[in-house]
Image (cartoon, rainbow, N blue to C red):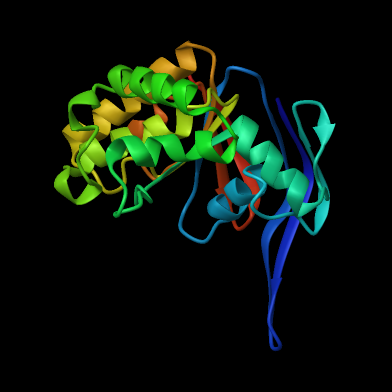
Length: 225
């Protein structure tokens, strides 16, 4: 699904330039669960932003589902994000003024899905995430674990081919963190490709493969046995 070849990303200021990614190459197969690990500042988030079509590289190529998307227009990147990619963030990124159901419904509104179909899809995913009983609550009325369940529901409501998870258990205790990782595992087993950035060796054990970065370079790839 993802083919990354010799990616380079450089951040420049008037006084200094920093190479965030340096000749990064690896692939992610359809249906795979890959964890990206490394110390803070090694380029993990930069790489995830490029994979998520939120940013573009300064060098190299990036192919998504057989299409070269290295330097596509912002409009095309937005279309691909809406239709094919779901995001799960450490900080949940829920909209406080919207209910659980309304937060989950947002991606469907952006895609122009009709009201009846939106309602059916939201109900189905909330039931799957075991959060239906909170559908009319607001984010501040939920626990951290419940908020992350809502965030996962929002990420998968339009059945994306790829989920990008950035430290999905970083703000959760171990019990809620394990629940979220089990949810991601279930989604992966149902066919969704997952790329997850994490500092947690425990969470990385849920992945099929671990890609380790250091100073913007891939230094090791481990396949889980």
